[in-house]
Length: 123
Figure 1 (cartoon, helix red, strand yellow):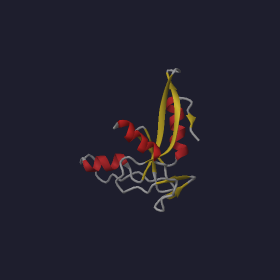
Figure 2 (cartoon, rainbow, N blue to C red; figure 1 turned 90 degrees about the vertical axis):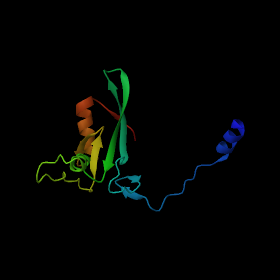
Figure 3 (tube, rainbow, N blue to C red; figure 1 turned 135 degrees about the vertical axis):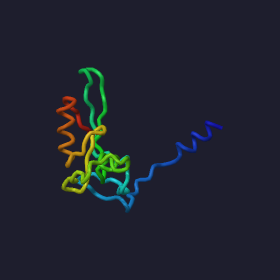
Figure 4 (cartoon, rainbow, N blue to C red; figure 1 turned 180 degrees about the vertical axis):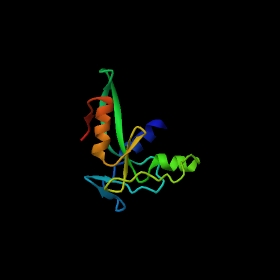
């Protein structure tokens, strides 16, 4: 049974059709996000070395809302009159491993390089 199932999966060909609901942000094509999309969209990724020896991945994630503000708001922890951070020029917020928001991908990458050392960014 397993071999028959593997054969049917192997026979499937990936589709290369472009989803008409996709949008272009910069040079990357990303799915539109819901207003409360916690996962966001990964827009950059790279590798850095922990302790100069252990390879670690890092991701820059775009979201369309200020996660910290929304979380504090939901938990009733905002200071009176506290507003969300201003989004970047493209209307998005960028995060690296829960840190941010940063206004641009370049700012998020610069923070990552400063915090963790040299990063080899994927193309």
